[in-house]
Length: 234
Image 1 (tube, rainbow, N blue to C red):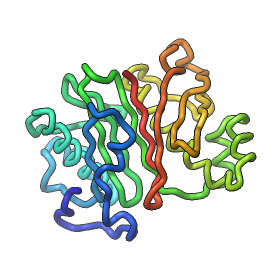
Image 2 (cartoon, rainbow, N blue to C red):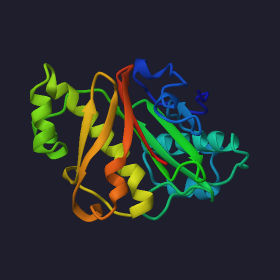
Image 3 (cartoon, helix red, strand yellow):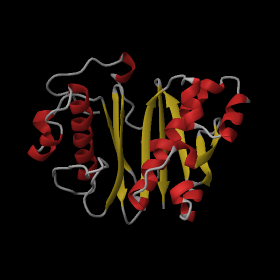
């Protein structure tokens, strides 16, 4: 866990103590992860990074900055020296040569997961506050088949957040390879709520020509009022 530096944001109580193995449990041993409470760390950023958030509100500055500090700590495990990590023009993370990775942040929580490109082709990580989604949001996120599964569960509306997080992790995994933005309806997942796993059932839309997308498998956990999802591609 990183120590909050400078001005600390007002955070929910559940986020003040972070289990450092939460993300690691979702990935292979070749992945290095770092988790933290978002805080304002402007003085730990490189000038190019500070420029990216020069006009941002404190919440955005905390999320962006904490993610960069976490990423540098993870990269140091692979022997990389500290350097600026300025995102691409589309705001996706830019990693040093030889590294694949993913960043996530939500209210009171930030995490980074990276691996050597020689070990994994890509990975995706997402964290969401565990909450019940509005029916309209569920209809936007879930396909008819996924909604049928939710309707068969005792607390289906409460479980929809797992589809949200799993699809976000899937999108983050595929994007560095396809550079394609997807709609939630473009992918359909099978979720095993008891095992905390998910897999791709089908992929539609602009990336359907990539057969490897239909072979992605991931894991998720619900703990400390968070839903954290991870998927990797070997």
